[in-house]
Length: 253
Image (cartoon, rainbow, N blue to C red; front, side, top):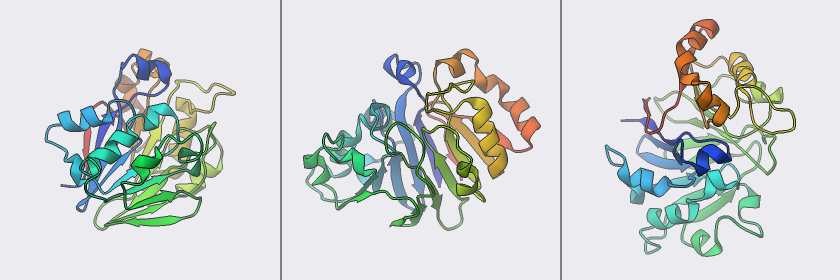
């Protein structure tokens, strides 16, 4: 089965710190290729407690969008798990150059355990077994940040838009993508804070016109607003499927 599993949907520091939502990142399992994206605090615990089970030693890649702790806290232990405690040199880590620069969030000893560490660049394309990843644009965040467009045989194309402020090029960068996963921290935009508010996210999704959009990475205002209760009305308004992710949610492809 090809699927995406949300190991956590926490965004912003207080939702993460209080674990009002889990913060384990997103697991992709597509055409016998496995990749975890942004393994934040608790990623390894969430993987090991998942049912049906996720086999962390079968991971092929770890993708880090940027070096903030809610996206990287478990990256080193996930590398150890992927490589059988360092005894089986395997796998790829894809990350911005800032994630391995001084001070690195991916420790040198952990980076040495994998087959390859790839530093991300706008416009680059990467092959991970049966997945093709394209980096469409550098996002506008406090630190070097990238999302991706993922393609593989016989599954919809998937775009991931992690933490960023709104900028018009986002829409053209992700056009013709079937499924969009987008981080939405706030119910309303907050000038000067480089995260998306819900109206901005909806503008981006409306411009891209995917078959399905999945909202995740929620801050306190999104939880207080109980945004998941408004999903149906949003889907009707915008004429495409809008889903609010929940911890442990699986999306079959």
